[in-house]
Amino acid sequence: MKHHLRAASLLFNQPLLTTPDMLDLAVRWANQTMSLNIINLHTNGFSGAQMMFDDDDRESLAGRREEQRRAAIAKSGTDVIPVSGVLVSRGSHLAACETMTSYEDLRRALNRAVADPMVEHIVLDIDSPGGSAVGAFELAADIRAATRIKPITGLVNFMAYSGGYLIAAACTEVVVSQTSGIGSIGVIGSHMDRSKMAEGMGVKVTTVFAGAHKNDLSPHEPINEQSLQVLTEIVQESYQMFTTQVADYRNRDVVEIIATEAACYRGAKAIEIGLADRLEAPQQAVDNIARAVSLNRQQRHGNEQSRQRIRVQASAFAIQSRL
Image (tube, rainbow, N blue to C red):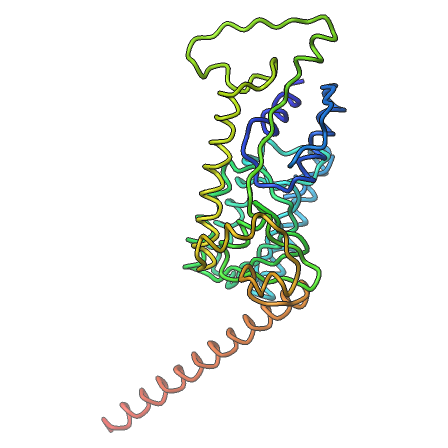
């Protein structure tokens, strides 16, 4: 039950950087799982991947993945960090049977890659419809700060909508394929009214509170004008931050970002309107980045060998001149 209460708190009365269809799916899940008896499912507008393993299997799998990751970095100089499924603020919010990524885990993986001298290029492998607004803007700012240390490619493989796009926009570059989708630069919020369900069960909730806003957005009664205004202000505040940050990251006027009206774009169209930089298939993009890093390493190694030869020749000349 605690898990369901937490899920409900992440889903309702919060600004969400996600697509309306994902919100609808999440509301349907909540309706079935928590027996909410929600009747207006078709609103205008809600998981690193987690699966069910025991502790030994999880540790073994994590160990193998880390070995593979280190081997790939040693070979390519590139760290590919997955950004999969619904985005949530903390690792404790991850569901065992849903594909989710937490901003907390992403920040940890990003910091590790930035600090690793073997990593010369970071790739965020994004396939996400977005998720929670809480923590999203802080993570995007951290990604942008990291781009001043190492190049970061936002690879859309094959979806970067809403909060997923915010993460992509903060990168050094955004790469899309012909069928990749990006955009949905908007914010959505929902209120859950379960008063009719309680009434049908013969339950009447009486709430006593102090402070005019203490009972705002209560699920035990229909939303009133004050609560609607509160939710609207929360959504608008997040929308302003969203459009402003994307405009800054993409070097666009915020008016242009607002003009997208949270529309979704695919492939070449995303590049045309300035939300992406180049068109390339995901695997090809990663291969080309690794190839560029390898070439850069060879050039540095060649330059170092050349400098070493010059130093040896200079030393030999100095010795000869003293004879």
